[in-house]
Image 1 (tube, rainbow, N blue to C red):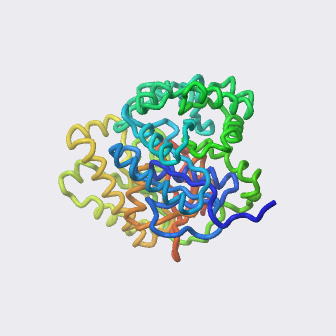
Image 2: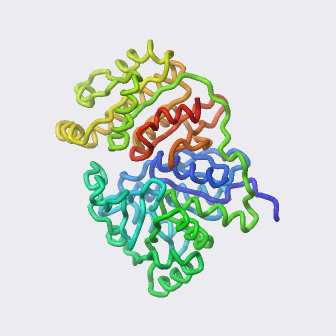
Length: 427
């Protein structure tokens, strides 16, 4: 076997912060030492890294901006020595009728001069499965799962072939479960047949982790993979097979971090609502951020920090803007969707920065947009990925001399007792 490289072999581009952490955590579970960089980096990577994930905030940005940032990330990953590239989006395929999944995929394919890729957001561990091209969330079709009410990316069609075809001029096809169940060789045969028909992007069915492993084995030679985080389970073995990745033990090791504990939650997903309610029910002190007070110009972040100051030394505290859909819609109707989101993100980022100033060094953040705002406010340039709390959510440690322990949770992820579970993984 040849000596292992000191440069990464897999380069990933994620369209939001928590999605990047989700993917990086999956790669670590599969034995790849992984870092997550915040935005397109202007610095070299730490040594001895197998995979790198560049976290963008491009899921809901204008398509032109999303494309430009994604291509810039690709160029940096190429210059860092990566050999295969991965565009990661949400397991619920969050996008509008015009993108951004289709436009970014098109641009990356063009930049890599490749005529074929797959699209597979399946993540069976989190009950996201694809069958006959239709995406299910649990037992419900995507458009009946609650995602049809998403304030920014409402998903009203579960047929991913149709959804993606509306976003790209490339021809979209399907690798259905008959081929996937027959294994990697059958999947490769199906890919060859589709390419012969002029198909350039194929949705791939997957209902189990075994499906993901077979898909991963079948796409070892594709320059570009587009998917949720699930496919990450099947890729590391390809690099082991060619001698560029060892059987890495301890890939999730983090430096020790001591300090106070806190939770900041901006997600309004049903999962996070249940988690916040559960945490409050256990007696953890909680402060609710009111967007209408923010819109009125009140210093809500300052009030939250003044409230937290005498409490945070006694145990974890929670500052949250999590609310039920009807409350969110009422606020959005009064002050506007974009303004409401921006005000909450700015306030929670200020709260997180203030909490760190009080000595908080172990911080959980719920919500993709909130996580992006928080890591920006804390000037975090990158994260080393550590042990998993729940599927899709690992602990991380910021790069630098004085690391912070951060758990960046996608709104829809985690069990109802997620917050308590997180402290048990990293006491």
